[in-house]
Image (cartoon, rainbow, N blue to C red; front, side, top):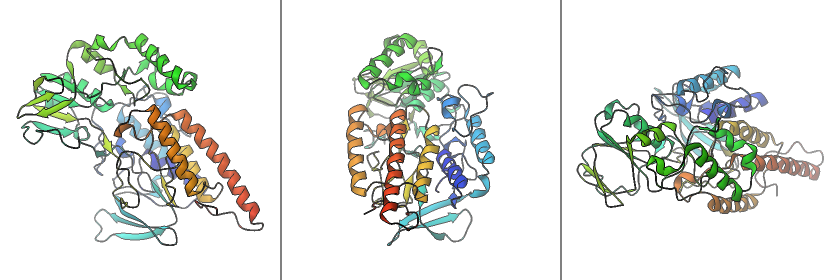
Amino acid sequence: MIGAGPSGLAASRVLAARGIPFDCFEAGSGIGGLWRYGNDNGMSGVYASLHANISKESMSFSSLPMPEHYPVFPHHTQVLAYLESYAETFRLHGRIGLRTEVTSVRPLEGGGWEVTRRSRGAAEAETDRYTEVVVANGHHWDPRLPDPAVPGAGVFEGSAVHAHAYRSPEPYAGRRVLVVGTGNSGCEIAAEISRSAARTYLSARAVPHVFPKMLLGRPADHWAVSRAAALPRFLKDPAMALLLRLARGAPALYGLPEPVRRPLAAHPSTSDELLVQLARGAVTVKPGIRSFGRDSAFFTDGSRETVDAVVYATGYSLSFPFLDPAVFAAPDGRTELYLRTVPPRLPGLFFMGLAQPAGAAFPLLEPQAAWIADLIEGEVLLPTPAEMTRSIARARERHEKVYAPTYRHGIEIDIRAYRRALRRELWAGRRRARRATARRPGAPWPAPVSDPA
């Protein structure tokens, strides 16, 4: 197991409960992944004031609810405390090797994987062989900057950082700040900076629908799993647009242009504070950046603004530095994974948490881990590699019809559709296992394989 963030913890709990032996390696000094503020593995972009934009009910694992006394949207310190409690409840701390970085995962001829790791302070790396590897290293840790760079970025004399390095608004007090990107981080950081900055600009090539955190008295993420979410797409989008108009009003009230995409065609940007700061005039929305000057930003509408600092809230790359790109990579933000978990022709390799639902990902992790455990134990069998490849292609076609064709939306999923697909695969996998056993009377329970033939 690589990583002890939410995905790695969920997988560790399931494997431990099944009695499946495993090693879990975490590069940092503590568990929690991105939810550990200042994580010394260098992978956490949590800033000091960050609160979850998903409600505590939606964020909870099914096996352990968040404490009732938590606020609806918990602070990052509370989320970390919850993850620590999860690890303590299921006695996971002693199973996790901290300060241990996995540097290489290599497939072996004849099956299995060679895993090389280095413990902090150790003189030499260690190598072991494993029958399976679960990758749970997260997808919000490798900052993604505009590529190619914005023309003139090299001559800009102000400060420029990725949102991953942002921690507090104090360094931006009294300055003219440009925040690039209108995802959740961009919206929240722009709103926070605007309270003390001289001017704050928020640049977006395509302005998204900005959701308030509460819709008609309910956390907005609850609507993603409500009965309304089961409506067909041609009804769901206009219904959500109407709900947003009733709860928030027209975008023009906040100085926002009308979004060009449907509300559910892009990952929701959620921020109450941004809407307030837009209405106050503390944040000014700008279109995409055309170029930079020494102390200026030029925009695609021909306008120019003087700026002292830039914060790039431009998302993250999907990265697996321990895997040779020839073995597995996701260069366009899309993953060739069956049900976001299994690479068809790499038996014994599994990926956890490489899916981005409109709501919280936590509730998906334990069911995903349970499926992986079933595969390891041989209780279910996968389709053939060819069948999985065809299924991935069909899923890609459906995805491109629904979501924006951007890097950010490459792993976007509908949480209800994913749950249904996983339930169907579990049923089909058990049937394959029964058939494989019936073909070999008296044989031991079949080992997990990608192609029963």
